[in-house]
Amino acid sequence: MKKTIIAALGALLIPMAAGTPATADTGLSWEDCGDGLRCGRISVPADWDAPTGEQITLGLAKLPAEDPATRKGTLVVNMGGPGPQISALRQVKGAFADLTQWFDVVVFDPRGFEASSGVRCPGRAPWATNAEWVFPDRATYARYTEQNRRFGLGCADAAGPLAGNLDSEQGAHDLEAVRVALGEQKLSYFGNSYGTVLGVTYADMFPSHVGRMYLDSPIDHTNPSWTDWLLPKAKVKEDNLGRFAEWCATDQSCALHGRDVLKVWDEVMARAAKRPIPAPGAGTAVRASLIASRASVTWEATWPDLAKSLAEAHAGDATRFAKPPVVTVDPDFSRIAWCSDFPSPTTYRDVKAIEKRLKSVAPRIGWTAAWPQANLCAGLPRKTPFLPHPVRPRGLPPILIASGEYDDAAPPANARRTAAQLDGSRYVPAKGGHALYLYGNPCVRDHVHRYLTTGQLPPAGTTCGPASS
Image 1: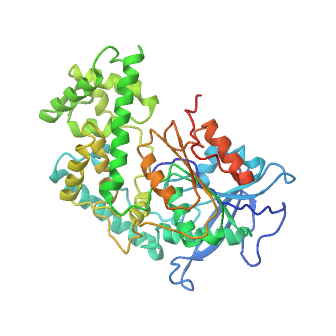
Image 2: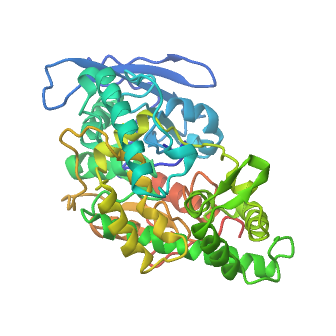
Image 3: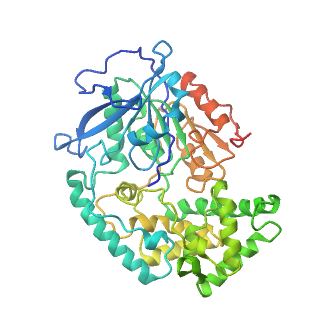
């Protein structure tokens, strides 16, 4: 899945002097592994329901605190995905420079990824008709489902004892084993994006071991209704199309400046639905489902290109939409882990029914939120999944949660739902998108630093503006 960044934090940091050894017999020792990191490993059960059975390795990496004299403890981070963390930390360690004033920043690759008994699936996962993840018809979807089924079966064979044991419930046990190996009495945790699923699961299972926990851009695993889970995503994505139109109205650099952008959108989609629009530069034609798949409205940086693509498609040339996008997600093993936690309905009938419901509130583009889960999970073999469910852990310390108003991957409504189930938590909305801390929102970062180092939550009603303010 995405190589995104940012994490969740635990409360009640128990300061630990530099050099204090980990608890006895953990098997954890550190050695230099380049890029300023120190790496180690521990062993855990492949299946925590059979703790004396086959063992696997968890690979860890530590970005040490800058000054032992000011070190306050260890902060365990999961930047999202699901996906490898150590290689991501090597690429984005600068984002944690502030935190290493006070903490050893520690990550571990989730079970099955890279340094943690990594699984190599045979072949490649299908990628929804050249990244056309909004499926145009039943026959295309059926072919894709069968391809994904074959991929999933091969992946399950390659996973061996990890097959069926890749969900966040197993991961929360791994996180507890990491806490013990680090010698921390309480877990201090920073979970970003998918890392919040792990954080909330840990808080539910081990509430007495939570120290300070920060959850950024939560992916809600507490809502068992798939339609209710998707509706906020659809609404925010629809709003983002409206923001794009507003930008075009005020910015003369927009290729659609001075035009009714939403009318252009409607006309392009209607034409493409009736007959694919020629794309002579790519030697093909573009149907509405491909435009819906590739129209990026969430990130402001993509708006200039989207405006040019729509203007040219409206004039009869959809070549820009026909060009394959730069894929920023791992379409392979990550889907196995994701679908262990989010085994949504994937029959064509079910997905079309959800799409119809979403179209009633988000008719232009938000309805496409019905399809990403199907793209990932259709046809995959299912063992017992870790189903989304409400949580109500008792005895938690205060937890800090933040999300962006424009985030259609982790919409604010879902963040508020998560916060409401964690007693004493404080939710901070921000003008922004996904991964607020990692993308440098100064207001969010200031609140996170204060909370992690002192335990002080922002006052009730606190909000944060955009990163540029």
